[in-house]
Image (cartoon, rainbow over all chains, first blue to last red; front, side):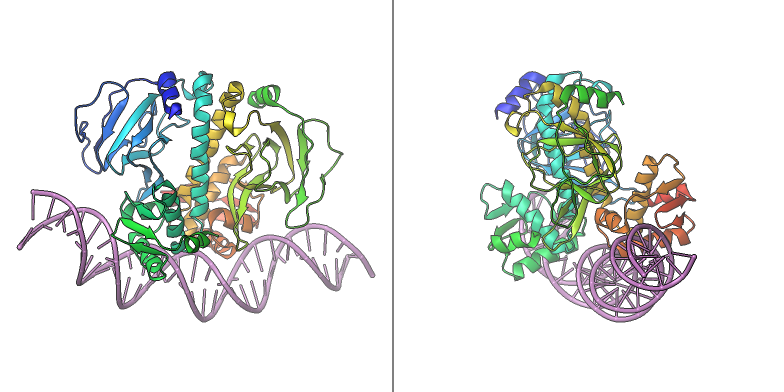
Length: 231
Length: 231
DNA sequence: CGTGAGTTTGACGCTGTTCAATACTTGTGG
DNA sequence: CCACAAGTATTGAACAGCGTCAAACTCACG
């Protein structure tokens, strides 16, 4: 898109990036393919971390390809997923000096990194960057608000239904959804267990609303019924 | 604050405002006091609407005094509260042409209104406004994200505990919280019923964590125990 | 063909919702 | 000043849905 070119021209800063296997000792960058290109493009393999909660937030990212999740871990070890990001979306731009969430690659990812201008004390320092970023920050704000509303649907089936609607919108073919993420990812995003995710999908299949071609590929048979769940 | 002066100088637009009793036929402005002042300051009485979901979003607001809730109504009549806003905070600035949520006065409110510059197609039209607003939009983004995380706490008591922590931070005296909102407001914010809110508070009182001087006034007896609920 | 991660399904218990009754608070009018 | 009404809050009992634990199944990969 032209927007990414604008940002690349206006904001870019080449940075070396590192990623690590999740829930293991951190170790250096491990790509899937060629050696790292000089410049702001980086590759991150499936399930590897991009940054951690508490890391310095001097860099933010645009996704070229793949899916990223931002998440937080509570002290009892449970994981909460804040959002999934797909191609052409931005993540990691935050108000403070540190990342408030961790970011991890759901699938193999290609990212463009941008260096953030100005600290939180002089956020208006670079007006050009601010005004370019505002629409993206607002989109993330709306996303978080809609997510919070989603989480208050009463039933698990409604939550799963709304999740499917969200991903149908991202999908090239609105009839067939290919899920990049595991049941655990879905559960941690919706605030329910993997068993309940599975049962909800089974229930929707029994009601002939969807059809599970495989565990990760879902065909929508009755879009109207699916939409009515949300109401 | 100096920020509000900056915005008033940079962005202001005088607008006549209207509010209405909630869940009744809309009727014109009904203040609590003197006639409406010319200019961007308006008064809204408790429980009256400020704008509705779907209204044109050409205006946004700063709170001088009082508490505002933004909310949405699902088709089954249930209300979901997205956020509470207090003095010095902004609300109603949105990416699209229409408000995505309704806004209502929890208590009697004094507001400053600002006219939004530029449509969504030319959001970067007014760079000065964009860069001034960015920090506020980001704060609202963070707020929504934290809210989404809050909603996934397992137990109702944890949710209520986190809610109390939030409001203790706003309170002048950190030991005593005066709730401006009803149990229904709290329940709709936390995604639980008023009965469960009440039971959770009773449970915290039995555990000697808090003390309910009256229904709306809560004294925190054991801040450490309260904080540990969240972990 | 075996292994391990991911997924599905079943049985049971707990937590929050629902429905219902009671108490408290505030404002209004006699 | 008291009585009454309406809104708000608390408490109880029964039920339903989701979480938990456990076992079986599927699939990709070596």
